[in-house]
Picture 1 (cartoon, rainbow, N blue to C red):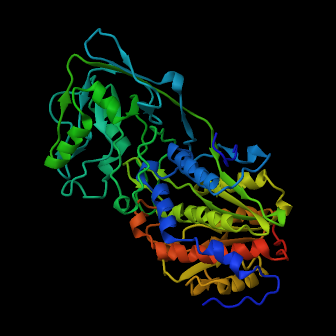
Picture 2: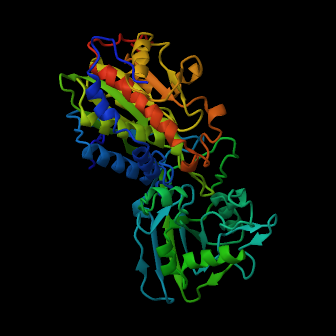
Length: 531
């Protein structure tokens, strides 16, 4: 069990209640672009597969955050452990497709090298996982069919040649990474998983094994040195739907399908599938490998259900008012992978906000403020603020003791010296705090927009706190339709971030939180429909 999981110009400050500038400067000086960049590179690494809720990638992100909180000396929150962990039951973006769960007792994969020989059993969750909507059992001779694509448009055909009836097709996820084939870096619709499965079923295969290849390393890896390495094979509960792109092809098929590791595929076949993939990509031509005398048995099953999901929480005790709390937060989830294998890494949305919380907590730990700081990283924001709603429904500290909530969601795009701030309409008394924060230390943010984007106020996790009467502020880079054309697409990558803007923004937000955590007075509660 992870620690901290919910189961888990410098102008003089004239305000007499303001904290001594020297104490503030200690933490402020630690906020550095290089630290923020390192955390963003981990969280947005393709190996985390877009941090979908729920997913193995999300769990790996939670482990990284929890480890950073522990290293900074943050505490777990005593009691109320059920408010850390919450249960995901909501249907996802596709009507009639509830959250799917793998069924271990009905999933299996074995092979024998000679007909009638002893079967070699492979391990559920290590070597294979099922595919939602593709259940049943099958037995047959395996055949490697490259990427399993039959395309007249390109032209490219992995399926030509001898018959496939009764075979177990072994295919690679996605399409060849070849600069002239298909559409270059853009993965075509023909490479979608369910489209491939439809075609293979029409050709008479008895079952399909889809090989999950390691994703290519992003350009940022060489600069950052951050390499999370491969994680456990993740069952994909749901699929990403990217803005302005055609919806995923989700036709169900009547043959069993498993996703498998390259290691498992190379044990089943008389070849190394990654070597075969590299050869296809080098030559730009299909390759088929038959396996006479070998037999594969597979069974696949999924069922509708619910899953437990974690928020990540860390507490830094205040020096004088430890039972009053300033909450800072961000969502650490994103939207995952689509059936074509394209990963929405969510570098801006919201690895930047998550890294901001982590960096700020390290800064506050160097010189603790008077009030306590409660840091919360939420899962399920992309599915309707689910994590923050669960947190506010069962908070680990009384809502009445929460002085304010400051939320960060997307900080890395748009004009470098500007930031958007929402929440002053609902909490006008906080305008004075923001004005003083601009003067507390030089952040190089020259413009704080407070008169645009008001329609966004209900769209991120601070709104859950506003609904229960906690004064809340929302810091954001700008309007996504103009400042971030890659919002909710697989183009939201590390390479497109302005880390100088992220750093400037974090310094300004740190100033705001520092004042909230040290001022004698508390902001009044907002008028809300929820209280």
